[in-house]
Amino acid sequence: MYQDRITLCGSNAYEKKYYLNQDFMGLPEQIKKELQIACVLFTEEVGGILTLEFDEEGKLSFVTRAEENDFFYDEIGSELLIRKLRQEKQDFWESLEMYYKIFFLGEEEV
Image 1 (cartoon, rainbow, N blue to C red):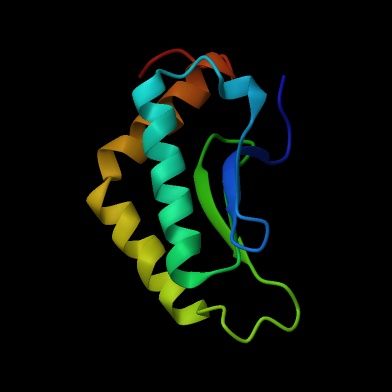
Image 2: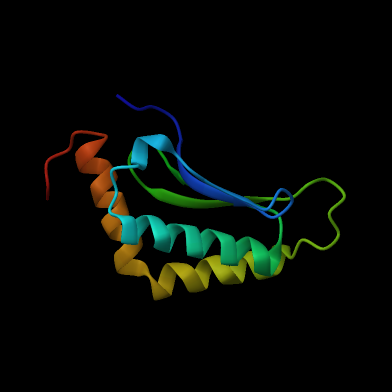
């Protein structure tokens, strides 16, 4: 059904906007709020653009980028913050991966 990378959500510090892929509107409200808080706080702290993307195997990736002449973007801080988010909310991210694998890739629960 899905191929390549599918964006779950993202936040843009330049436009001060948050995006949730319409395909994931079925997620519980609390999970959608947690995603929004994590993404917005991330871009408020380090700047740039953050997207959470699933690859073709259902692995969730944190993808960051900055505009070409953005000297305020904290590249080192972004890597440290991603590592911190992954550790502190490990169960949350793993649950999202499982949700994606079951409901979008059609895998059976392991």
